Length: 457
Ligand SMILES: Cc1cc2nc3c(=O)[nH]c(=O)nc-3n(C[C@H](O)[C@H](O)[C@H](O)COP(=O)(O)OP(=O)(O)OC[C@H]3O[C@@H](n4cnc5c(N)ncnc54)[C@H](O)[C@@H]3O)c2cc1C
Image (cartoon, rainbow, N blue to C red):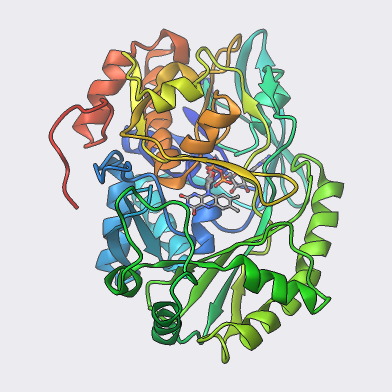
């Protein structure tokens, strides 16, 4: 049943990590779905080539399956990913995908599901009827348009729709730093591995599970490398590069010949402010070339490396989060709490990067925890749901659930909930979570802490 007084049954704002899954999930329930994205591509941070975390917990137990797994399998079948890779690091397992294949694959999924897509269009306002959100105002290239729907999903990362709707949001005092992620090709990775084997102590990673040793076997298998702090200092001492952190994380790309570099960061940036983001971008781009030159000159295996790609936007770990009907906490995460209305599972460690220096809060977590449906629902408003890093959680909890597999799992839950609510003409808080959970289980999603059968692969 479609409510023809509205233009759509569901509008999803943001075609990033969580949003595209939300749009597809709602459309697979035969809803008329509009997906609005301000950029010209889909997948958000998925398009940078950094590893997708959150599929596994620290004990290598699979905690995200469902549509996120379908995405990985499709990329694997096209030769664009090597699939799941298990590791003795705190995150248990991860997936790397070819970033160039992300948008076309997502577009295929959305086309198959019948989602209407609107790119290059920014949501700048919300249509409200009392406390109910009933649509969005969109700035297209040359005109403004308005679109109505009984349910809107805010998958903007920044909680921008919730903010525009007047929902209460939270912002931490010292926001985690934004990062310019880039890719290098032409790296001789076997040479890098050999260098690390012949220089004990040169490999550093503080996220190794208890009992794991840096053996030759470990170094042959690892897809992660950290640039040693001393080396970063040597690059810095050449005068043209000013980092805020003395570590760089490298991830090997699926072709085995490239490296994704994560951690070229800017200090104290408020990611909600365009002017601050502009200043940060200018600073980070100015640092890019000297840094790559430093890698070439100083790191064995990098002599012939070249810049192969750079995510044009700097990426934001943290901006606004909603205050929802439940706020997930650090205790919920570390005590592996389950909830009656759990609609997804998180299994990633607490990963907080400092806004200003090398410090951070990195804490291994045992097992996994539930993400309550209530955390996706902004308090005090009807017709609105959130998915992705902007759901309701404390800074510490968000530092775990913000990873991409978890965001995709939340997208699946939000899309289904939106479809069910629009079909019944109810608001998200009126939907019995038990029904949503049953639907998600039918779609192979994992929703119960230590529940169900162990999923392999
Ligand atoms: C530097 C960095 C490194 C990270 N490393 C990892 C990692 O190694 N592994 C991992 O799994 N996770 C990692 N993460 C975390 C993870 O990538 C993000 O938290 C996650 O992708 C957020 O997903 P999202 O859907 O909430 O937001 P996004 O993927 O950012 O999607 C939001 C989308 O909304 C769109 N949008 C925003 N506002 C509007 C508007 N007004 N109108 C229309 N569209 C709008 C944006 O253009 C974007 O496409 C990292 C994050 C950062 C920033």
